[in-house]
Length: 266
Image (tube, rainbow, N blue to C red; front, side):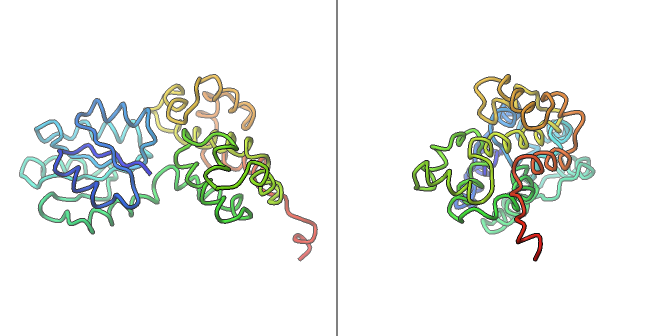
C-alpha cells in the first residue's frame, strides 16, 4: 500500500523507517506534487503537514478533502501557535489523527496511526466487498490477488498472476474454474472497473486520471470495460451508481461463485 508523505525531509525519513515493513512511502515536497501523485499513482493514505510550504496553511489540506474525500489523511506537523490555529480550522474536516513532530512521533506511534487508517483506504474497502468471491481460492492465490487489487496497474494478466503465485498459467486457470469463478482475465478486468468506480466517486479524479492510475494504456479501454461489466460508460457509472450498487452488480453478474445444489439444500 502506497503512503504519500507531504512533509519535510526529517519527518519523511522518520515515517518511512517506522512503516517500511508494511507500507511503501513516497515523498512529495510541494502541494502541486501531492495533487499530481494522488491523480496518477495508487496513493491510499496521505500524511500531510500544514507547514509544507514553509508557513502554516490549511487551504491545501482542505482542498484535498474536497477533491478526494475518500482518501484518508493524517496530519504530521510541529506544534506551534500558528499550526494550532490551522488545526482548529481543520478539525471539522473529518481528519482522525494528528501526530506532532519531536513530541509523539515515536516509530510505534507513527506505525499505529498509519495502520489505523489502512481500513479506510479504497483498496481495503474493495477487498472487503470481494472477500466472499476470493474465499474459495487457494490461500497463495488469494494473497496474490489481494496484492494485485491494491496495485492494479502492476498486475493485469493471468501470466502475471500465475508468476506471482509461482504456478503455471494452466494451474492458475484451473484454480479459478474449481472455485466457480470466471477466467482470471475477466476477474481482473471486472475488479479494476469496481476500483475505478470507487475512485470516480471523488470529484478530484477525471476518467483519464483513473485510467492512468489503474494502468490502462488508454481511457477508452476503461470505457469499454465499464460497458462490459456495468452496462454503463465511465461517466454514467460515476453519476448513477453508489459503491454498494456497483459492487452488487459486478458481484452478482461476474464474481460470486454459484451456490451448488448440495450446498443450498444443506
